[in-house]
Image (cartoon, rainbow, N blue to C red; front, side, top):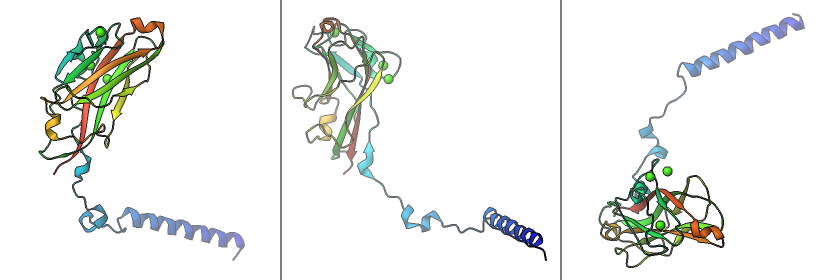
Length: 215
Ligand SMILES: [Ca+2]
Ligand SMILES: [Ca+2]
Ligand SMILES: [Ca+2]
């Protein structure tokens, strides 16, 4: 047998073996393990991952500070994530309350973290500008230390303050998140720029997301 013939026979054998191997897979000759028989895929509930999703405020009020009128134009437009927004004109120092988030948790739940999402922007970036958020657990008498987002943009951006395992420096009870007690205060800051006198702040959405473990 010539060398060329031997090579040709060898190639036919390799091609035929490959085709048969493919046929074996395509005809389902591979093994299948039922998911219920696979212990690695046994799912159990994971309460530490429970969270409320982002909740909308349904009440608001201007607080003291600055010119004392908070987000003076359309403050209710910050209830939802959409194309409508609240405006705080000539606003450094102004503060605004958002509340009635309707947080509903199983009694006795452990609060692991709270995230506040603010979608906001500025009319300009002169000076050092930021948006601060504090939380109250008693209807606005006492407040957490503020967290602030100092990202200055002239079009909307999203900032997440707090976190899934960040309870803002305290141990919360379910009752402290009720509409009667829980408050979000948004504060507008500007320093170090002549433009601060006329700085405008725009707020599309201020939403709250609570992470908890049910008892
Ligand atoms: Ca938005
Ligand atoms: Ca204002
Ligand atoms: Ca909005």
